[in-house]
Length: 459
Image 1: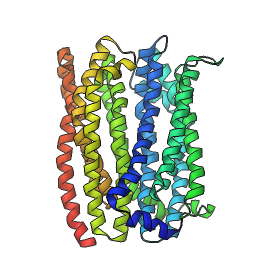
Image 2: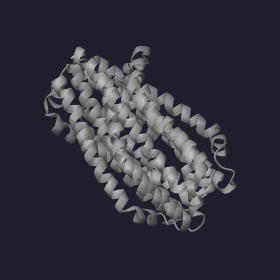
Image 3: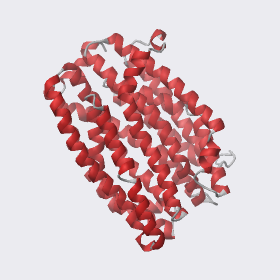
Image 4: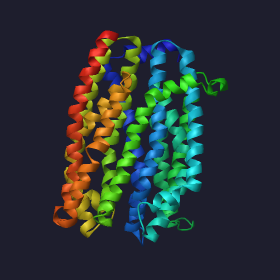
């Protein structure tokens, strides 16, 4: 596909149709990414012994896994927006250099997490638990995920390169293949089926990283086959300070935004742990269930960003406004559907993971209370994608900090003090999420009006 064909897709297809064409595969891709996070939990929670402890162990490992994904995807987001804008400007050389330097960054990211897997995991886990059994299982799981993180790091880059050129269907196929691989391998490696040894949480980790590697290899093959707008000459991998700076001027706020999810989860693990281990387990499981809904919003955001960014490069104000309007509308529809699903299936969801007693009650209350915030959370996620596409990286970062740190952690801590003295009021802790999303959405609307004033002068 030559550059004129890129413009034919990204610059001429009506925005509502283009957003659905790009967004649906991206939504499926993100939902399947959530599968990686929840399938392991479903299988380990039903282990013959120590299932709930294993589920707790994966909860403690989860913030670091999220950080790994945050840095990788954030780098991809920066490359995606810069590459889309470059193609919108007709600058194929800049697009190729962007892709090559993104791959260089992926190499550095993998080396970092490899080193952390070897040296840093025990210290990290020890800050969250003193339970020896949970510590050992969590460390075993996380070390494997870090040392073999090459799959998730490089897939995150090639996924965004495919999305930037309108080939999101191929990234979805890659994600599906990896998810299916993970689902098949999980019971085999965890429970020791077909003659293999029973590996427990280690088996869950190996199933995850093998699935990620399958996704990476397929995405690489698709990139080489269909991304004809991008030259894969090795000279473009040679690091350029200017190009890397441009990638991270867009991608760093996205990295911080997703990394804040890791910080928030880590902090909440500690806060909830002062109430009970059951609260930590319930929150960890709920968080993975909600990802099926919020990751759908992230998937649509990843369609919103290149569409608006490409239109920005073309200086086409009407397509920019259509991107904003339909991006918010489609996100609202997804979040309304997601809220209904979680509210209706709260009890069946908790049963899948073999929960019982207090832990199950806490998990159900989390689903019932926090899901009310999905509509506001989805709007905030869409606003962040809009801001990133319009060079509003700081605005995107402000929203992230508000919804995941400033408005949630202090409120959760205050409500946790109430829950410790009145266990029947434990559900009040979950309302911190609703408060944070509502306040952040008000800020998002204000920031959009400010960007709109700048946009009128630029286009």
